[in-house]
Length: 389
Image (spheres, rainbow, N blue to C red):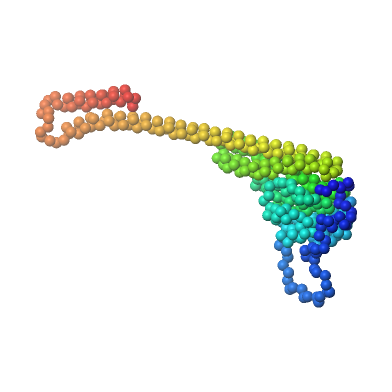
């Protein structure tokens, strides 16, 4: 911001003309000329699908003095209030709307391009006497048990503050109401509104941190309970923590950069204390997020170890079952071999042939019986010695 003793834009209209182009009519303003004949109204007009301007107001000494319905009315009313400040809140504005703001407030084209495209990392950049801030807001969705991220772009000039939201968070209407309830703080200028928005974004991280802590506690229980779906939950939460780190880590450096410019830009002492408090909160949140990611990494390692142990136990059980099955097969095979030998001898001598060895010998039958018994005993001894029986 430019150096101003009272931290507000200069009341001189001539100074404003140095950074604004009032000669150019704002977008949507009809050209001057004689009134034309009234035109018939269209038979039916479709309602707008999306309203970009959420709230637009002009303040003087911290109090709302006008609530223009359009951007053109806001530009006109701000020109009529040399000591005034415009606070314009937009939600996913169109390209013509942002270009009209750029022409009116001399916004840098690179910053306007970033605000249109979104998907930017948190950052803080200065373009002359205009400050461009990108924030990543977050909110915890209880039903889905996940973190939803939104993007917020802020343009801060000598007598204006423009917010461009891409997403549902944060609730800037609550920030505006809180600032309007404290005219003394709001009278400090656009910097006060900026710090209030920073505070709202950082305070929005608190329920997210609590929700993530609850999720991690539940995940730890599921890991030791052996829930098969816990690995996917750990992975999804780890990805959210990566996004959370990308939202909080740059914010720490951004706030310290603002604090480093206190003396250069003559920031009010009350705002300095306010910003230091926000910096402390975001530092604490960033540390918690780093701890969450490390905890999830450790939990994932423990889960992998437990899964590996469970798999080893299952493989050991299968191996033991296979070993027992082999033992049973050995016993069955051994008894089958023992019974096969006498069956073979008996089958041969049971054949009705007239000429067979030892068929007419009186000791042939006892010899066959002894031979079958000897074979069975021998096979039993062999299998017993090998541990099959």
